[in-house]
Length: 432
Image (cartoon, rainbow, N blue to C red; front, side, top):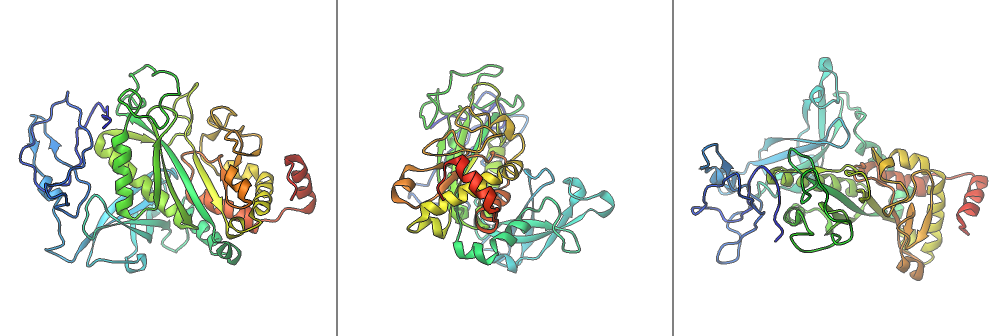
């Protein structure tokens, strides 16, 4: 198991309820993320992901593990709901907890709540109240039991969505009859980079220095090639436990960079699942003492950036004759290239340079099996005459509500003029 080279907090992930043989942790020790079972091979507690202990200044273990791992189910019907929302930057995640009187199965059973928007950059101090509307529920892999994570969106007390609430507009688009009828599927490839605490330099890299050139690290194994595997694996299991539709994970081209995939997801669900998966990753890296960044180009120079490639299909593209529908969708996307780029993430111009498996940010292109294009169509899709397309433009810090709904709007609701369509088809060599 690859070791996590973090210069600060020590931690372990355990599934045993009691730990009596733990030894003091010193500042020179590096802990890995361990998932252990008891002798019978079954979990002894419903909480699957747990903090082992807190290290005090004198090096002794402060044993709060029993309380952290306590299963409340036999003692009370009450549960803990962690309300999660997107903060003022549009990429940061915030959360707070509240007690709910009994287990719930649907967001409509949960009360609305509020928070101080002036402390998140989402409201002025003289009118700071922002209201949380519960929208999606996931099981809580940190607290276990019947406890839940709640994805919320944000509104003024008068019921108007605040500017950073991108879910509201996305839900409107996904409710359009034409969009509903096409059952849009999304598969999102979320890339991210792990950084060493304090120095903010990629995990596994020598501080102030660089590893060997790219090539050996993609999907690799080995202590000199794979950095942070335990975080990736812990996150994978946490997502599965939570009910997130995670479909895979892999090490990326730049060392210290990883990717997980979510989907296929239908409509607004894609955004809910990505945001919850990001929250879980933030919590796991927090416990590991590692910094998570979604910067699209965390290291300048001859290193790959981080994207959020979005695979997209509709009922029509998945049926016979779907390849022609895909080409029409690509044509529409070419005509709204600038609108998409402006909504696809901050700092994306540092990533979309035409190098490192990207297309230029200034030019729209498409191709079959070409990872240097804006839009890639797979060989199997071309062969079968139906399937999906991959939009390779979104940055790793993109808002999935914005990207998924914009793809649906551009390809299903927006209609170009005949003249613009003909010119674009000629330019892109698309016989639609």
